[in-house]
Length: 208
Image 1 (spheres, rainbow, N blue to C red):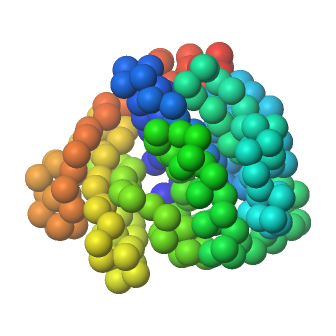
Image 2 (cartoon, one colour; image 1 turned 120 degrees about the vertical axis):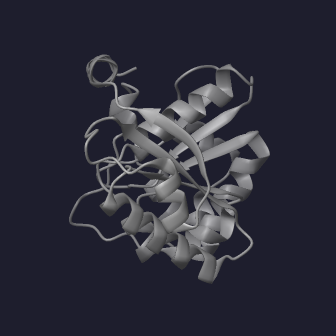
């Protein structure tokens, strides 16, 4: 849910793949209106992603070269800031065309996919190889992760779904233990990230 830190996890995961594992990585912010990845990385979002999803016939190697923003040599960002009054209806064809080109140029594509976008546009599930749900160790996080995982499994039963628990220690008296989260959700927790207010605030202020 909003505020669980999925965008921060996605950004750091993509950065880790590109630096520690030397992969060529694209990081894609699928919140086309209010996405925060460009702000987190101190870059300017363009219109490329929204344009690609509305008019897939325009997408080619040159289009993507102009639309993607280099963050490092191996990490490129694709984001947009669409008009809040504009509803962007994404077709399965547009997604297929975009990611066919993306796969040709990158070892990994990391998508930051907000839950409301996933619910409105479940066609995104068609191109995902694996899914990581970012949840807080709370009753709300447990409920939402369980419901979203159920929806995913009904549509794409073969796609692996895992959980990263984020912001652990923010409310120590209310945090659910990992084993409780796993038992009640039926989902495997593959990572636990402690809450670090100082580091988070510093990174946000610097755009790094």
